[in-house]
View 1: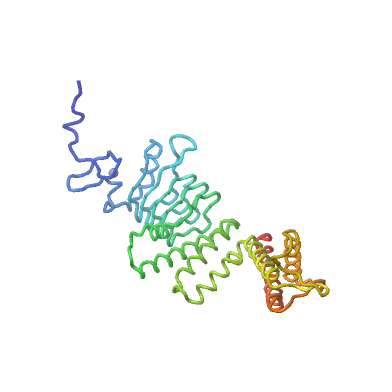
View 2: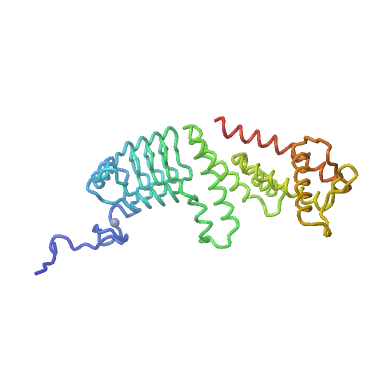
Length: 330
Ligand SMILES: [Zn+2]
């Protein structure tokens, strides 16, 4: 027969946080851990958390703002499992030297948290708020940063509605996060991650320029051309596109070859047109690379196009070398 469990011992209500079965005081809605107003400044907080984790409890949604968690060592009950710290509020928490290896910090708020010297290897920081977080000397190999930042997610979900000034603020915050994470990655020799965050940083800065302003256009152009110096392959794609486009132009307008005119004609068989297009493509490549053999010559408007192609070609080849060397030598 079912008995009323611990009726006389504890009639206090349970915590309102979804999934939490802790009891709380009558006037409170949340248990000690989920109550944002409960004082967590005590020296024993880190020890108590370590004990909970050893017992296999999830720390999801814990309110740990300003907590003293220096040297926190969370060792999960099951070896190699992730310690669940998702949605934890660690605003201004002192996590210096904390062992957060493989921790699940998804959607956690690390706003202005001090993670100096902390071990974040293999941690999951997707959608975590990283604004103002200190990452000096912390270990960050194989961290999951997530596809978009917390601020970007907020912008995407449209919770802020039509509020241009708040939008601008969020873009600014996201840019700041990218800059600080990028710098930490550079300092740790994590250049792939640093490159990723640099590209994001520049894209977020672009979005703060007014629509249609020349800064925004120039920034977009640099992005398309070389991904802010992080995507050598884009230079290659751009070059190929330009060469092909110019080849089409020469093919339609015409090139001279020893008195003959090479161009698209309606009356000739298709294979002659194919051959003529290949000649135009050859001329385009020769012009782009400023080789200039002189076996084919531009006629009429093709001359202006050829001059422009040669100019852009020179510039693009130099750009490719710069971007390629920058990417490969660090
Ligand atoms: Zn609770």
